[in-house]
Length: 112
Length: 118
Image (cartoon, chains in turn orange, brown):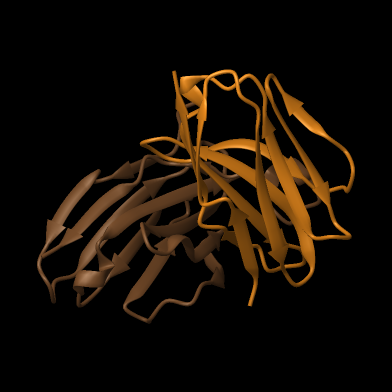
């Protein structure tokens, strides 16, 4: 069975801090890993990572994948209160089985 | 483009009843996936439909079923509701996964239907 483990489960930081969220996975026939941000509504897409070692960046957020060690990290620099959310990691299998397996998420709270 | 829409947004049912939830994907998206989200279990995959066919199914009992129509709209049905079915049910659409375009694996989520079973 596919498995996605995120750590930490929750994190409290102050505005301006840098945070690193972790996602490790075990999946048959790995295709891609996705990061989502969920506030009090539906998850919104952040990144999709398919190749090892290539950093994806969007503003203060960046993410990288290590397919050898089976993990990904999501970095947020200069955090703001608006970054407070649950960050979800999901993996997709390749082949004809299109199925996303999600981790339980990391709850990030950014205090002013 | 309009986003993914789900109806109803909130629902209260009693045990033993059945419920049907609806999802309209983003225009042009042909794949619709359903997820159940609870505080304890997180987001769990229910099933995925593409071109009116269920292509993949998660580990849920047969009380959970779905279908997709020719216009890609999808419905999910839960029969004989149990208290443990109380959850946020999310639908997500994507373009045409499995066709070689990596960007098509991006899923866009609807706002969800909050189901409470009493």
